Amino acid sequence: MPNNRINRAIQFQPFDVLKGFKEALKEVERIHEEKKTLSEDSFKELDNTLKSLKRGDIITIEYYYDLTYLELTGTIRKIDSLNRKLYLSQSIISFDDIVTIKKDSDFHFI
Image 1 (cartoon, rainbow, N blue to C red):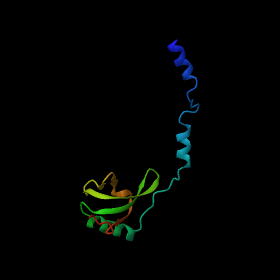
Image 2 (cartoon, rainbow, N blue to C red):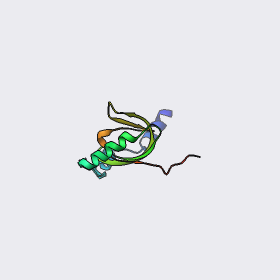
Image 3 (cartoon, rainbow, N blue to C red):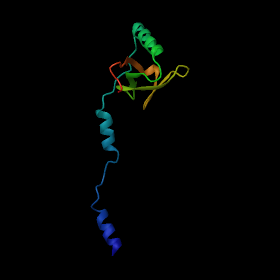
């Protein structure tokens, strides 16, 4: 008798006929952007900003990731100039993907 109840319950479970279809639709709906090429002036400004950063700075960064541009605010954990990586609170970002960096002097901890 218990097997009969289980079999009966299974027939009423939701059924995804097109497995993965919902995820595929979400991916198609997402806006894909081409990676921007920085001008020489923008590149120099970004390079100077990167050189002025230090561990513990709070920054807002715009960067290219997974065919789109994202903006993130976080605290710098590490700057790896050799491997060209910036380590923030929750993320690791390649220098090559960075578009803009803004130091956030508005944040004050009490």
